[in-house]
Amino acid sequence: MRLGAMILTGGASSRMGADKAALIWDGLRAVDRVAELARAAGADSVMTVGAVDYGLPFVADEPAFGGPVGGVLAGCQALAAQACRRILVLAVDAPTIQPRDLTPLLAVEAPGAAYEGLHFPLVLDLTALPRDAAADWPMARLAERAGVRRLPCDDADRLRLRGANTPEEREVLLRGA
Image (cartoon, rainbow, N blue to C red; front, side, top):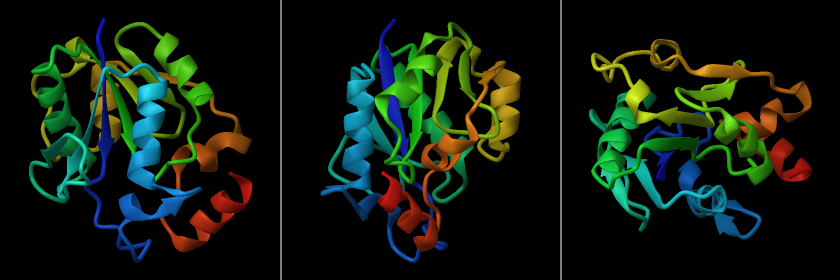
């Protein structure tokens, strides 16, 4: 089954005070680091979904700045057009995720998996996407309706998997990454 990956970049970065996708993490922009992670996980196609084109294959959010479900739906549609049937959804604000973090999620068969208490990273089979899914849904509703399996998450890994939404969280991750 062909794996496609989307990197959600559509947030306003208001709590960070700077564009999270463009922040440098260990010598690379966050968006490039997350794209490398997706490729290392086996994604055949990697794209960003949001309001800004970062030089990678790109799909615009619908609606712009409308929340993650709108981005996920737009990305799923674009990746389905590329014959991807399994989707890896990553957030640009978590460039500290490592390939070993994705292995358990990718090992779960349909409909997909995410860690308990986290929306992303998420693996989702397109066949599980609810036909009535709407951009204004909360992410938890989309995951529940899709039947996403929740895997346990070690508290020591939670911040690294969740990523940085503020400069303070970024500093903590940079020290520990």
